[in-house]
Length: 422
Ligand SMILES: *Cc1c(COP(=O)(O)O)cnc(C)c1O
Figure 1 (spheres, rainbow, N blue to C red):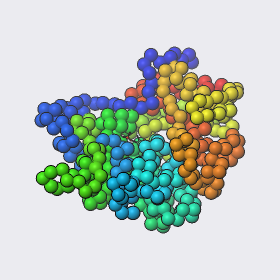
Figure 2: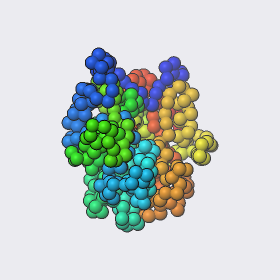
Figure 3: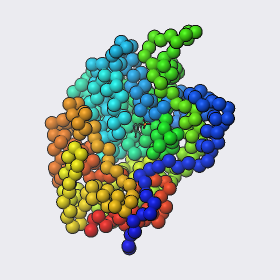
Figure 4: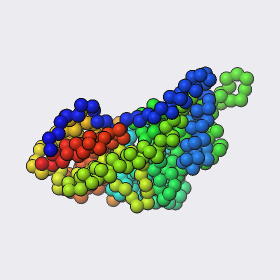
């Protein structure tokens, strides 16, 4: 089969608009509710709360803002209100997912806390509950855990919640990538004490940007709403007792989100079909798709694969460059990504684990065998790795997963990937 370069680029994941979005934007414009108050915001808050199954929600400017306020709130509930020039987590450690986007963990640093990274497990590519239990043995005073559901696949939520409960810790769920994914029949974003979702441009539905805070506590939701609008007190003038933020969602953005919500299920079905076609297309290759656990139904946001160890050619990654040695019958993520790019298709490496990031090199990292930081940079192909995140990063990649990619285009992508194994 002769494959041509794609005339139109095949993207990783882009916004998919349907028309209703424009109507709600227009409504905001025509009624002049162009700021951070209006019907679109109210509707989006109500609809997402109902859908996710969390009692209260606050629409915000981004998922990162939502995570920041989750973390700040948890810090205040645990340790009391900080001084204006101190973070709510000052002097405290927080257990965080390791293989994730940095927006999951940066808010801990915004509040002067110290992230301790917990290794990943192979069953869901999320935080390993056994490693989390180990972490509580090492740092018994920790009271806060932040988990992400990578690529739309729910983590082992029951196990993680049980560990949190045993150690009296609060849980924050970063459901930015997993809106619409369920675990034992319940939506992600409803399991943590405080939860965040994102409407960024490449997520399963989008507002072009935006995010949301979710909780079952009315008092906490009101607090976040207040913080997000500069912490104004009820007074005739601008009266402030707490530090404030300008984090509220705009009613125009909310119009886009409102128009997207009815299409969430359809987007998930399209992404699932993409995943299934890759799975079928790669069934004879020495690769495995990103995992699905029997307890959950992912939203299939991104399709990923991991190359079996015996089919990996040598690949060495530095801080910003990479080299590999081609071998017959073997390949590596770099070769696949470069080849896709040559054909005008966009893939992406797996999120580089946080404990391998220069900015977090001094932070602790805990694996389930308790080895952690000491050997975290020492992945050797063929060895049984104890650093699961580093191993998945080394062998895995995200495939073009745009729901506007045609079946013919995807068939060509599959052929391109197959060629790399020749
Ligand atoms: C996208 C994303 C975020 C941040 O959301 P923004 O709306 O872009 O700020 C946080 N965590 C994860 C895992 C994400 O993928």
